[in-house]
Length: 139
Ligand code: GDP
Image 1: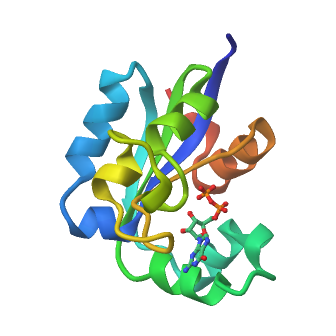
Image 2: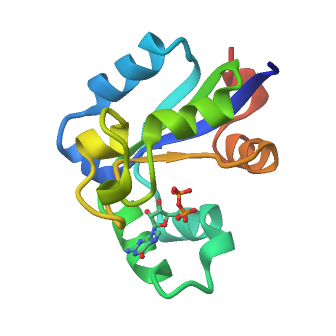
């Protein structure tokens, strides 16, 4: 297995509901190292740029509204197979379809407000990590 870095975001709903500690604790318990971490409030331009691949989708405006509705925590997770392992810990996009024990099953209310983000491929991970962090900020 390759050692990988992936971007994780604790979304505004999970921050507002005080799940930051539980979510970070879960990643550490699962053996993923926190290589970088910052709490921030995204501007509309920052959220639009981050989710640019979804700009033609009908839900894009709602997605940007949600991601700018309050602070988020952006993190870089590192470990063997970190991209796929983070996706497995997160669960399906729609919490109604997410497996028991996954973060979205535990903490998300709807497909729109679904608690966490995780990069879905090595290409996305490289872009997304670079979107929020400089190399010197990761260790
Ligand atoms: P992910 O990789 O599991 O996060 O899922 P996608 O890449 O398909 O979608 C990106 C994000 O867009 C999701 O995590 C949701 O926050 C949002 N999203 C996806 N589908 C919908 C939808 O039907 N309605 C709304 N409001 N948001 C959606």
